Image 1 (cartoon, rainbow, N blue to C red):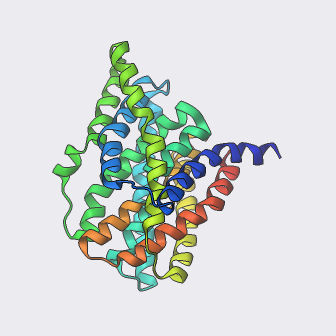
Image 2: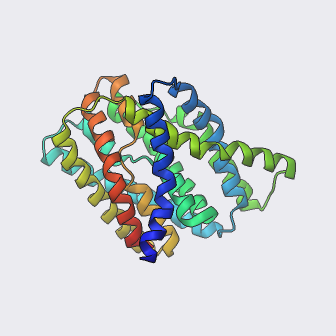
Image 3: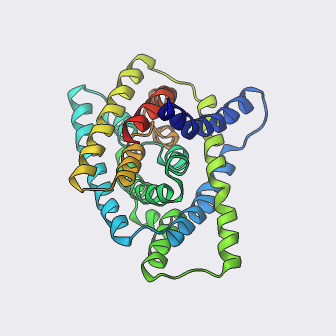
Length: 293
C-alpha cells in the first residue's frame, strides 16, 4: 500500500499538469506552443540543467559513469530498434526515431525530480543531454537525410550541460544573486514542459492506432529491459539505474512528430505513436517506478 501511494505521489503532479494543458486547449483558450517551447528549450531548461549540475552533491565519477551508460543504452536501443523496424517491414524514416527517442525532457526530467529529488534531477539532465545530442545529429539525419554537429554545439541546453559539468568538475559556484536568478528561471521549465505536453497531445490528429498500440508496447518493453541491462553492466547505483531506465523508456516525444511533419515522413502515424504511448504511460510509468523503487 505504501509503495502504491509513493508511486501516485510521484506521478500525479506530472499527469495533472499535462491534463491542464489538454483541458486548456479543449476549452478553446489560446496557447502559442512554439513560443512556449522556445522559451523552455532556450532559457528554462538550460538554466535548470546548469544549476542542477553546478549544485549537485553527486561525485563527478558517478556522473561520468552514467554518461557512458547513457551512450551505451542509446546505442543498444538504436540497434535493437533498427532490427525491429526492418523485421516488421516498417518505414525506417517514420518509425525508427520515435522508437529510439523518448520524451526525456517534458516527462523524464519532472519524473526524476519528483521521484528522487535534486539528485535524481542531476542524473536525469545527463541522460537528457546525451539524448539531445544523439537526436540533433542521428535523429535529424534519419528523418531529414542530414544532421548537423554545428547545430548541436549551438543548442543552449548542450552549452549549459558542458558549462555545468565544468563548474562541477572545478567546484566553482556563481555568485548567490546569479544562482538565485538562474534557479528561478529554471523552475519555470518543468511546469511549462508538462503543460505543453498536454497541449501538444490535445492538438494531434493520430493515425494507425492499432499499429501504434503494439509498437508502443514493444518500445516500452524493449527500452526498459535494455536500459536496465546496461545499468547493471555499468554497475550504476540504484537511483542512477532508476533514472536511466525511466528516461530511456519514456513515451514517444512530440519532437518526433514535428520532425516527421517538417521533413515529409508519415506524421499521422507518428502522431498516433505520441498519443498512444503517452496514454499508455499513465499505467506504464507507475509500473516501472514500482519495479525500480
